[in-house]
Length: 88
Image (cartoon, rainbow, N blue to C red):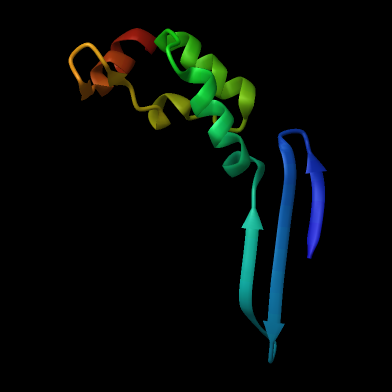
């Protein structure tokens, strides 16, 4: 079991080994811990501001433009074309 503090947060690894084989493994990355904060920070933000919120919460999301889902509340639908036209 090991914890280490990294720039993005706490990284945790835990392994159980039996007969020379890994039988159980838990990995908690800072990225998974930061997802809730990212979602909260992006609510009601402009699309480009949303991308900045995500990168500020976790700079390892270098492909954040491919991971963001934009929900168009005006038309009540998920719309990835909005993201592509506003960021690139």
